[in-house]
Length: 387
Ligand SMILES: C[S@@+](CC[C@H](N)C(=O)[O-])C[C@H]1O[C@@H](n2cnc3c(N)ncnc32)[C@H](O)[C@@H]1O
Ligand SMILES: [Zn+2]
Image (cartoon, rainbow, N blue to C red; front, side):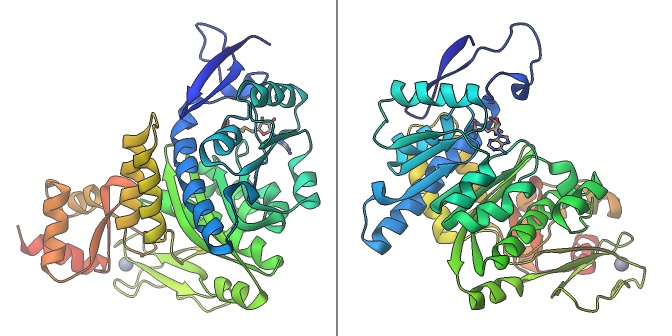
């Protein structure tokens, strides 16, 4: 395998040389490396560091006592960065022999034999054999086949990426239903829908093992969803987590949405504003997507590191930390189109809602969207009356 060296953060690793002149998908290389996921990895370094510091302080242990597994490590770039740039003890696993060999080389290249170990197993086998403080799942496509083992193995934090946004967001409806045992809706807030469908699935997988989750940071960026979920053990905590599951009823005629908490609960299929029939999504996660203090700690970590994607990473995490804890968002362009108005700036738009005494925030999901506790008819009234 021909390799070339790349540097992310302060870590340099060998990765396969992509053939020249062709649009070569990273998944076709002998060992996977996707440069477009550097942003995902940069935020991971900052988030893992923030969490590891919390855990070390709480338990009065050193960072090197904390165990982290990169279950699907490919070249090892993610796990090696965690070993070198965060300082926890890492296991870098991949079932491919080529990947395992390259990981071994990259461990030596970075002189990390003390804190990084290569492993060549099916991720599910490894996760059933061992517990880790922090488990990272970064598969091709859906993490669904690994969630049972990952939620069993993870003691304190589960980090998960899903790149199957079409099933998660309702574009491939049946695939989403098969993988996540939930119905998504493909509407203007489909990206948030995807995050909530994934988190709903993880919450139920954790509950099987009498574990609960506290989402610390969750974002939908480009074509993937990424979440950092703190884990709490205990059946009572798990029961409490499941109480944050439920359904979203969405009216396709007027755009109103309502949430209903519960798993087996009556859900009205009539819009309470216009009486038309609604579409129902769920069961999905209706609880928080982020913890503000954690987002602030992650931001501090981003600021003090040398990261190639620092500006983008800061923008995403800042937007997450300012986002209202409300399960759907509205798109400014759709509302203006509906009302026959030309779109104003987001600041102006948001200001008008705020001036009427409602809570309102931007969202990291899209630059033209906002969250608010005003309902659709209140929003439309504000803009109709101000023209
Ligand atoms: C998306 S890549 C991982 C990328 C890597 N985490 C990074 O940040 O560059 C997925 C990797 O998972 C490996 N893989 C797929 N299924 C696996 C399984 N069941 N057990 C272990 N490794 C697996 C593949 O060989 C591939 O290297
Ligand atoms: Zn309606």
